[in-house]
Length: 555
Image (tube, rainbow, N blue to C red; front, side, top):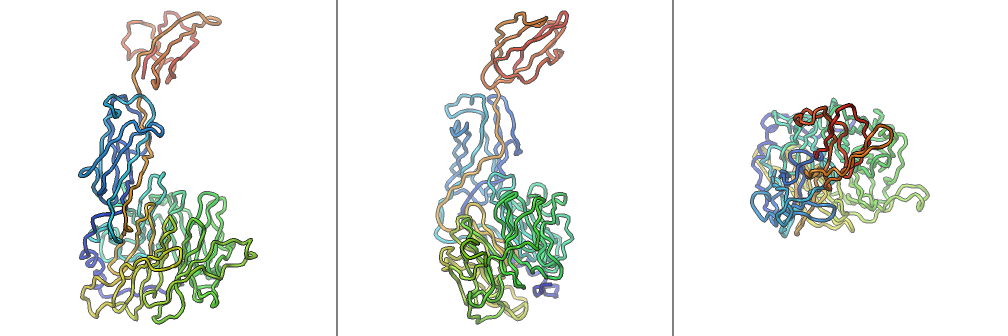
């Protein structure tokens, strides 16, 4: 069993996390902006509209699009209509709505056909790493969290969703006080179906679970519980209890490892789980998924070993991999003045080059230093450019923690790009100190924004790297424009047997039905369907009843 974090018993201090969150600074003005939660007429499924009919296009921006938003209505790769929004409504943080009036760029109605919708949001950029979230937002509050993840799957309905675990019951009644997982949009608002779920799992809490969280390439959310030595549960993007699958059941005696942090590579039957044994001898191991979606804890392959000669002489506390397979990890050293390295990159594991033995020689190391104390989480950005290493800091009791911070390292060589939240010691008593930090975990979104947890004030934050950006999101829903064109009946002629052939042609993109009635002057509503959703240029063989009449109608 792991040792819990120091949790204050003083009721006044127990409420301090929220107070500090509400007193934090406001966010900056720019960001790596992108659109998510894109809906057409309020939904994410295909819809059909008549020619010339307008549709509403809604989307969430994680930050204002200071360089504007461009919406394109596409027929294949060709833009039929381009809507440019320079500023104001349509470019603001949060939910925005634009209208496509059904017309092409020249002003005529768009022809019948199938259309996709793309949204490109752009930012003018800024010179340094910039906080783009607001600690005052209630959705950014979480009482005690060690796990955060962002959905980077652009072609999935939960793209941009942020998952934040809370593993210790807070003093209030907000969602961030409940033990379970918060579900938030990229702007910090709660998910449409609700902002919290425990997934049907009886989490132990006590600062153990939910622990680390990661989202796979096939849109599953994996959540860890280290009370039971690293159990992992899998959910869909709503964290619904009926989607829960118990995928990694670690033995409760710790005989097969005490797994503390994990990473996922691949999807479906190619999913590989990489896990760090923070208190045992298995180093970093990988596990291949079984056909039922679970992993066998007894079938792991050790890929990185713990060794004094390698410098990683304590144990890996967490793990991350880039697209090239390079392995990033950090040790959690509680004492100041530690002389060995604390962050490592190991080469991609290739059993053919080392006889199947674990890696021991790191490509690079970072640290030591007192500001490397208390390593908790690590994550590499999607491009393999940056590594975020989270440090809780050092302290002999709850009030005297120091050096908590998050370091952005160059993934190529481990040099420091910037320090975020580099903390100082917390003074005695309960005087508010917004410079104190205890950073526990991090993740990156698809466009390069960093999301991380600061457990001292009790919140999650997002930072954007410097520079301009633009990002394009394609809506999951397509728009089928149907055109009402009167069919032209060409011929009614005898066919084989007692049947007749009815031939007609219709306009491109139209749908037609064949109607029948015993009375030629009957109201249209009284005509019955003889054939449904017939493509243009149809030919039918009909065996008529006595005194039966037929009509071809566009639909």
